[in-house]
Length: 350
Image (cartoon, rainbow, N blue to C red):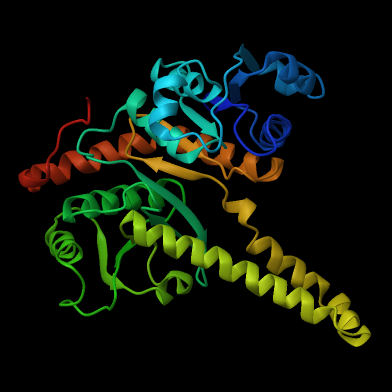
């Protein structure tokens, strides 16, 4: 019998909240029955939405709050003035042990600032990283950091590598994930000092890490490695470039298929293949960026997603909690720091 998981939900974060949030909870519960929710937001709106889903309502404890963190609110301002917001109270529920993880589609910067302040970081982690996984030619890969840390030293990159490796094992179920550091070339002498030093440390570690070496931008889609490690500036640019290219390709394909009756007929014949292609690369299937390195599970859903996308963010959080992802990270860092005392760091408490 599976263990029941409780998640905390920010009901008011996201472009289409709170309707999208509650509908997403219902979709998630259709696949996951061993789940309960603490839901934070406007109780009047949420009670009405929950009335459509008796099973979800029965599994949900509703907490009213009038305050909401806006999409354009600066992280520092949100941290100081948003103590009673739906986002902050949802995070507090994890910090207080009421929930195993939190999911929000709200302001990314505010969510990271609040989560780091409330939850702190795991032992051995200096900075949390934003990670997400995506489809490749060989399956799925995870990349981190995607924007939390603009500048990173070798220590940060090594920490990202260990966290990404644990994530790939627990969430993507890859038995021995391969790790690569994103660089301007694959040669050992290429890159700045941080990537070269991080690569040297990963080559020497006695942890059961399968370090591939350096990878380039075209290796992301190829699936050359299971875990791609980079700083937040490069990772965010790579992510947005990939998303933009996918939209360009999809838009161009649709335009070309509608240029003539003959092409429309061809599109009709090829519809099963086109539908399968669309499903495989549907960004909603991979919705949910994970804040790895925090002492609690925190998943950021895309702000513009729909109910299907939000349900997948809930599923990602559920899986991370049920698989004890953070315990795996703590165990690996305990072993790693025993080898490399110079890379041990405080728990992150302020």
